[in-house]
Length: 318
Image (cartoon, rainbow, N blue to C red; front, side, top):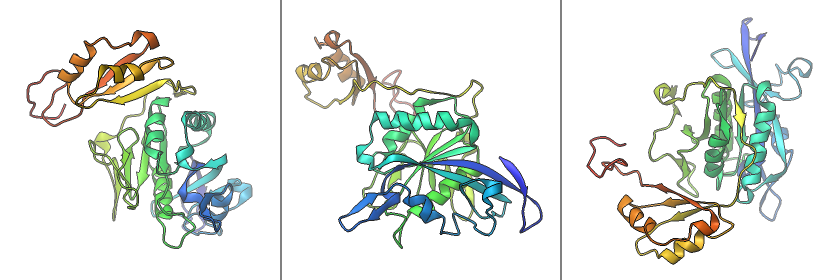
């Protein structure tokens, strides 16, 4: 973060530095006649021509650098940002654990140079990536936001501009030291969000926790819900083991079905259960966990009035 004299007001303008990591997705796609495709390098060149994303009258490459800089906000702030494109840029349906590690490594490498990070991502798997990164990026002291769009930013009617602008505002003006997802004027905790609609511009929701921040005529932040900056130093997990399975239990599931999922090379199994009594009965059955060295972790559904410590009704959600 730096301070430079503003030519508009004569006062010091606070300039925050944000790195935009463009992994691909709908927001940067271009219609090439055979459908939309992500195009490397398109997004930055397109944003340079939009005054809401780049103030040409203020920008000086010798002073600011090769990136882009936003206009002056009423709080006297600007955001300088650079766009780092993945090579190649990807459709989010093609994202996997290796790409999560690539994003985490990019943030870890650039961590000390920037005040915040925005990750552009396709919507289909954005919630998976935000959840994974929330555990891979430990002891975050800076804001990391994933965003994207349902309609390409190059289209006349689109949601990409408002989503990206909102993400840049939050990343440059607020310290929210966790992985989050910004969409349709709301900021969600990264490991509590899911895609809830395939075509609506309000594509994401967080069933068990309200948004951390909302845009209206003002910006409302739920500060009581924001994680506090940690004391230990930041570190990133850059390797993941793909030999972990998720099994959703259902009434009537057989022991042989569970055993089949637990075989080698699977090393771990997350069991999504609909009740602890059923899970205890299942785990007492002769499931072949040992052959794959698998470990089972039960995830009981979060139901109002249900306690994970006992079956007694509770007055508040656990």
